[in-house]
Image (tube, rainbow, N blue to C red; front, side, top):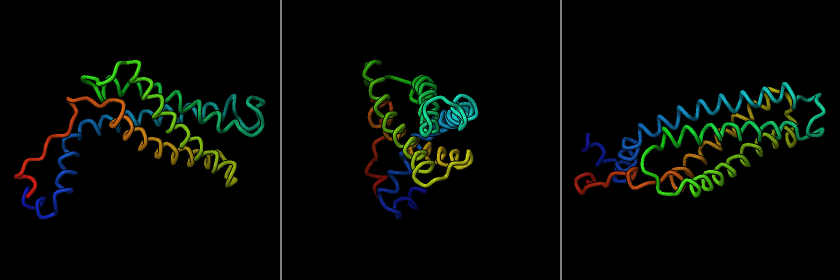
Length: 174
């Protein structure tokens, strides 16, 4: 099998080794992500059908959908912080908890902007105002936010020496 990888080239081998080395972490990240989506969409729909419904008088006339999205995302972020810190990226930490939390908040701030902007563009910019359209835009935003979060968590937040990728030997390079 290594011969097949060598013919495909060094970057492909490195990518496969990286995926293999992080398989458990990626599966845990995905499980927390799926649970986070349930939390996110659950809170979003509870708010959109309850206190932030279209006919409600809370949060103005136009921004209730974005407010609901932001609140739902913050709740799911708090869930994710707890789950990722204790399960997905467990092990020795590189940062103090305070710095780690600050970095986590910054990465999630970027993700919130992406998620809320996706809903805002769909709802206000494109005029798709139904609950189904809001949920579709929400799922797209969650996808963009998830990619941003994994890359940000991996590069800046939960990085530690114990989680480094294995070195590629000369035999693996081909």
